[in-house]
Length: 188
Image (cartoon, rainbow, N blue to C red):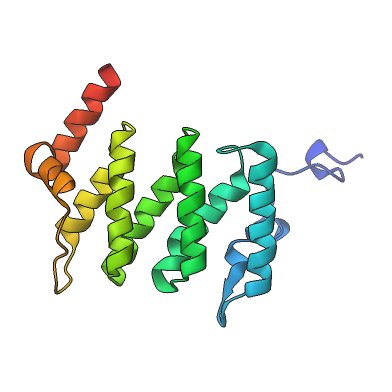
């Protein structure tokens, strides 16, 4: 009696147990372990992502998207100025090519990272990128900025620059205001 198709070598069974599936972990996960950041693994992963982005173009590299996500999480707990500046530069460059995923990751870094540890210069960048994003027709950054201020529990409330304050005081006071604006933009 021959083997069934699911038992033939090279064929996957729908009944495979979890131990039959090899353990997989994306390279970005291996950058961190119990001993902290692994510089050599990061450098190799970083280079692969940047090279793929260069080869495929802005917005077409899954490795670059993973690097954006990695930066968004890693920098919250371990701030590195050089890494942060590259994150900003590449996210802004992608956004200029109408691909906003890197910028969205940057906004998530700002909203959660500044809540964890407030840095005035980084906050000023948050304001700057928020207005650039808003002027490009997106509400994502402004909504993250609003949420940061709504949930911020730090001792000293940062002063909001005037152009953003005006938007938040007149057009975007609640999450419902953002939702209505998104619906209007979708209809337009």
